[in-house]
Amino acid sequence: MNIVTTRFGQVQVPEKSLIRFPEGLVGFGRFTDFALMPDPEATSLVWLQSTQAAGLAFALVSPQQVVPGFELQIRPSDVSSLGLDDPRAALVYVILNRVEGRFTVNLQGPLVINPAEQLGRQLVLTSSRYAVRHPLEAPSEYLRASA
Image (cartoon, rainbow, N blue to C red; front, side, top):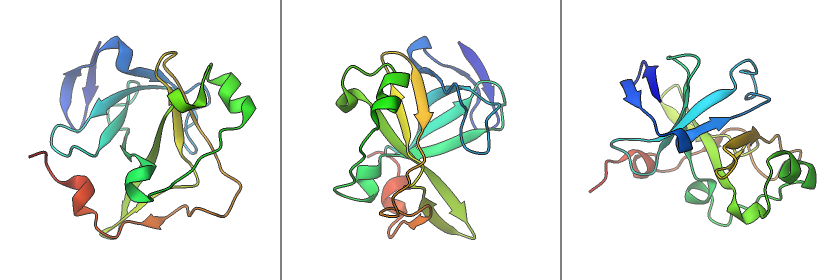
């Protein structure tokens, strides 16, 4: 599928990279169709690019890269709605934010994706164990180009 983006121009995305978020993302509920794209330069980044709005894209990183030992208990209702046979098969990402020159990640709103069903869901964790704006101590290690 060809999609137009403001960040990368027109790109060809394999069908298997298309992910549907039936409920959208927090604050972006009307956008449900996305492409999961690796960053062409920063090996730790993945982009969640809307297929419906060229200017809507989220930089994602694995929460384990940011917080070693990050644990996510996926509720049975979320496992069911994502069609997961095994929760360990899910891809889990957190959204990278840049505010006033500082980088943070949202550990309270992880994205859970079932790549086999091409379905995703943003969870809203009720525990205060993780922060909405967890600061990145060394953002350059997530943003550096591949060697």
